[in-house]
Image (cartoon, rainbow, N blue to C red; front, top):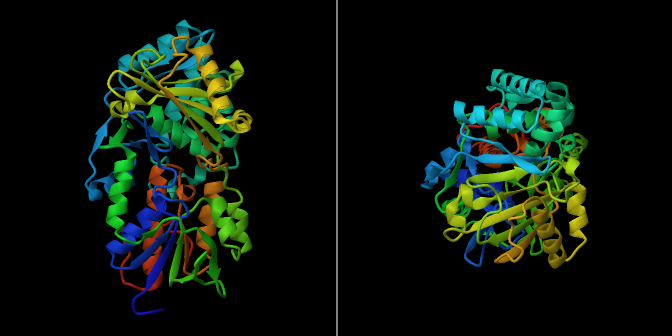
Length: 467
C-alpha cells in the first residue's frame, strides 16, 4: 500500500457519490469514473416546457434514516409532502379511493369505500387488516438502514405467494398487487416477499412514513452531493474492466488506459458489475446473478388539469382489466413545483411484457398508445397534452427476489476479493436509502481495508465484501 492511498469509485449514482463523499470526508483520495455525461445515475430530472420531470427517484420517506442524515449534512432541507397521499384502484368501471394520512377518518373512509363498492369482501377487508397487524408486529425487522434485520423473513417465497397466503387472491389481485407494482414497477411474482413486506409497510401501512422532498427536488440533493465530493468525478468515462491480480483489486481499465488504485468501490448495478469484473469468484457471480431488475416504460404528459379526482396522487390499474398500463400518477400533488401553477404532470407506467411491447415502437407510437389507454380509464384526460415524453427503462428498480438478501449477506461474510467493495441499492432493501447506505458502508469498509484508522460513518454488521 502507498502512504497516500487512493480509492477508485466506479459509478456516480447515489451509491458511488455517497462512497466518494465519505472517503473524501475522511481524507482519502477518491476518484469517481462515470460512464454517462451526468452524475446521479437513475436519479434524473429533465426540464420540459416549464415542467420538471423526474425520470427516476423523486422522493424520500421519513423512515429513510440514512437519506435524512445525508440531506442534513449536505444542508438540503427536507419537507413533508403538502397533502396526505390519496390514491385509488380501478374496478367495476371506476376508481375506488384509498385515503392516506394514517388517521382514523382516512382508515374509515378507505374501509367504507372498499365495502360499498365491493373492492373487497368483508372477509377480504379483515384479512387485509390482519396483514397490517402482522407487519406491525415485525416492524423492527422492516428496516431500510440495516437489512440484516430482515434476513429471517427473506425466504425463497415471492410476494405473490406470500400475499395470496396472507390476504387471499382477491386482495392480492385488486389491492396489494397493484399497489406493489406502483412501487416496484413489477408484478408480485417477480418481487421477493421480504422486500414486499418492507415496501408495503413503509409506503402506506405505516402511518408515520410520510413522503418528504428535498427542497429543489432530487436534483438539488444530487447537486449538493456532487459539490461535496469536489473535483473528483470524471464523466463520460466508462470502465471497461476492473483489474484483479491474485484476487486483489488494483484499479480499472478505461478507454484511456489503466487507472491504478489501492481499492475499488464498484457502485454499479449488479448486472454491470458482472460485466466489468470478470475475475469474480464463482460464489460472487452466482449471487449477483440472483439480482433482477424491473422493466418499465414511463410516459409523462404535461396537461392543463389532472384527470384524477382532486388531491389524488396515483391510481393503480389491476392487470385483470387487461390494461396496457399498470397505473398513473400526478407528480404535482406531491411536489407542486414540478408543474406550472394549476397544471398537472401525469406519469403513466407500463411494466414487464407491456413495457417490452412499447419498447418496440417509436416514441410517437408509444405516446399515442399510452394516451389512448389513459383516456380509456380517465375520460377527463386531455387528448391534446401540452407535451409528452417517453422514458424507456430496461433496468429500473431492483426486485430482490426471494432469498437474494440472504445470499448477499452470506457472500459478504465469505469475502473473496480483497480491496473490492460492492455498492448499490441491491445490497440492501432496495430504495434510495439503500443506495446511499451501501455507498457509505463500502467507503467505511475500504477505510478499514486501507488501514487508515478510520471507519467512516460506521458500517453495520453487513459491510460489503472486501476482507
